[in-house]
Structures are given as C-alpha cells and as structure tokens.
Length: 269
Ligand SMILES: Nc1ncnc2c1ncn2[C@@H]1O[C@H](COP(=O)(O)OP(=O)(O)OP(=O)(O)O)[C@@H](O)[C@H]1O
Image 1 (cartoon, protein in one colour):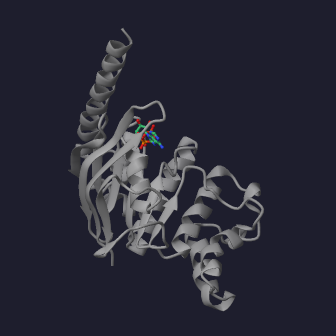
Image 2 (cartoon, helix red, strand yellow):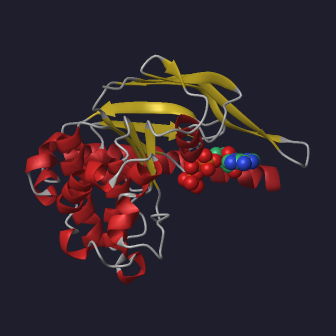
C-alpha cells in the first residue's frame, strides 16, 4: 500500500514578459495509504499545479515527490488522474475505454476481462458497456472515467474537479459513488474541488490552500466522509459539526478572496 510524501515543494513559473509567478511555496504533506484528502482554496492558489506535480506532469523547482519511498520523476501508472471532463475516447465503447490501460499494458482479454466487468458493475454501467461514450450523459461519462482510472490499479488517484461539470443531483449521487469506491478499493485519493460542501463531505482530511504564493493555510480532519460511506449524504449534512465547519471555511476563503481583490485594486490604482 502507498505512502505519498509531498516534500517541501515549491513551483515558480517564469513568464515570457520577464516576471514570475510563485505558484507554490514550501508545501509539505504526507498521505498514508487509503487516505482521502480534499483540497480547497481560492482560484490561483496552486491546487492544479500541486496535482500536476504529484502526477509527474510537472517537475517542481524545489522539493520532491516520493511514493512508497521511490522518487517520482514523471507520469506513470502508479498515479491515475480523473479530470473535470472525462478525457475519454469518444469513439470507443464504454468497455473499451475502461479496458484501455490494461490493453496498453499488454494484458489479454482473459486477464483484464473479469476486473473490467466488475468495475463496470461497481460504477453502475453494466448495461451500458457497449454504448459509445458520446451516447452517455455527463454523469455517466464521469463514471467511465472513474472505472477507467481504477482499471489501471494505481496506488494514488488524483481528481481535479471531477464532479464540477455535473448538475446538483447527479453530483450528489457521484459524491456517494466516490466514497463507495474509496472504501471498497482502499485507494489513496486527492480531490480538488471548488465546492466547500463537497470538500467537507469527501475529505477525511481537508486542506485549505492560500494564494500568492500558493501554500497550505489550514488542515482539518473530519468525520463526514466516513459517515457518508453508509449514510445518505443529506443526513450527514445534519451532523452537529457540519454547518459550523462549513461556515468557518467559507469565511476563511471569503477573506482570502477579499484580500486578493484589495491587492489587485491597489496595484491597478
Ligand atoms: N504554465 C504556467 N505558466 C505560468 N503561470 C502558471 C502556469 N500554470 C499555472 N500558473 C499560475 O500559477 C498559479 C497557480 O495556478 P493553478 O492553476 O495551480 O491554481 P488553482 O488553485 O488550481 O486555480 P483554479 O482554482 O482557478 O483552477 C496561478 O497564478 C496561475 O496563473
């Protein structure tokens, strides 16, 4: 099982105009195998940059990523990504999308078949396996994206606003599905979201980041994700600590955004 270490990461982007953006500054985090961390913060605080560095798509200017005591030097199958829009192969069937990774890894149909069928069952797509992706709704496409990621059996799943494009009801159903998959597979998950409610419901650990430079502002350990595995999420929201924590985080992010606006207006004046 995986242990993920984000070790003193900084990321500076040099701009063609000559300036630079300090997207991340001294970010250190450790995730144990099977932990689910949600990440929140105002726009531009470095959430996506951090996820891209953990995935190995970007090399940090300082620090390192270690997975199971091995240095991450580029993308590989140990870390799977799920994006806001599924990045699926539109022309392939649902089943071919889900089995894509194992096929590319050289597995035969008899090797991957049972697991792919199991995953299609778990995400509720058994009866849609022969449909083309373009025939599916947005929520179903995200189910395919989740199953496709799991078919590669990554140690860590990185999700960048995976439910952000869905309508409210579908989003709620998918939040329950993410919790179910988390418990069933025991995967380590980092999930970026702009929704405070979603971060509360899905984050066993919840990280609030601050901008300019992007850094860790505060971390919470919360009971709601565990409760949501067995309970209706609407019931979980009635938990005595839910509303207070929600208010606290909302005003924290509101204050950060006010400060950014203030700074922007000062520099424009
Ligand atoms: N390739 C790049 N070149 C220059 N600047 C970049 C690059 N990628 C990101 N940035 C800057 O780094 C900062 C962090 O960006 P990032 O996309 O990681 O933030 P975010 O918190 O994910 O934002 P959002 O919530 O809007 O998606 C921003 O100021 C962004 O403009």
